[in-house]
Image (tube, rainbow, N blue to C red; front, side, top):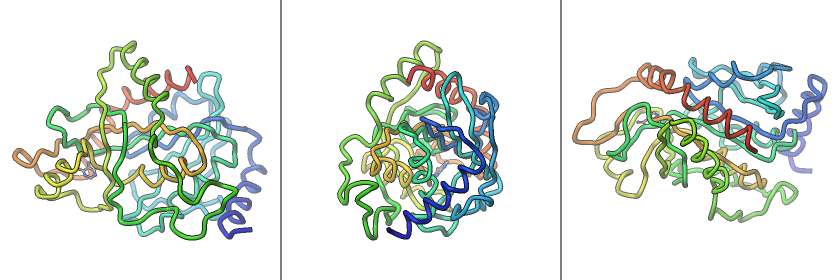
Length: 273
Ligand code: HPA
């Protein structure tokens, strides 16, 4: 048995002592985007630090809790707080919770993040459904021995974000009167925000939004045949000619302001699954 599989089993065995919930849907909530939790009928809350082999979130704005409960009539497991490459974790550590959620039974994963908008048509506070991604992290969570029981050595990436889920989210947004953008997300390591030259480059290679997360989790989910819906909240406008200084506090503020739109879309999308 692979070391990762062993660690997954240890995490699962622990979680099974704390909850009998069998979630069908996993949710990862990004920076300033924790509001969905208030909509959940909470059954069990477990601190990451209690779970074997879970890393600890080092970002102050991120809480570190795994929440089990129901949203509408659906059983869900929610990561309140996620891990980033810039915190110094390996890609395998960052994505370990996704592996564990798969063993818990999830077939669908919703991922949210705060992102910089490079498409000039995007404004601060916009919601962007992720249609595709570019991995510029310079690393990949699937590097190393492949566990064939989890997924293939060379996973297909022709549809990392489920077209079906995107279509549902678009339909839901229209019905809720929330305008949404759609576009390509590029992941960079951070932790610094980008230079003007970098934004120009990232835009030129076809990206609409940039952030420091989501891509590792998506890759690992696709590896294990989990359907992914990715949603970015645009927290800053990253057009080189008009770029303004921007801080992490601004990111959190913008995300928090736009968050109700995200919660509404996620809640209603999940109801229709
Ligand atoms: N760059 C990278 N990550 C981000 C940004 C950005 O401009 N805004 C929010 N997350």
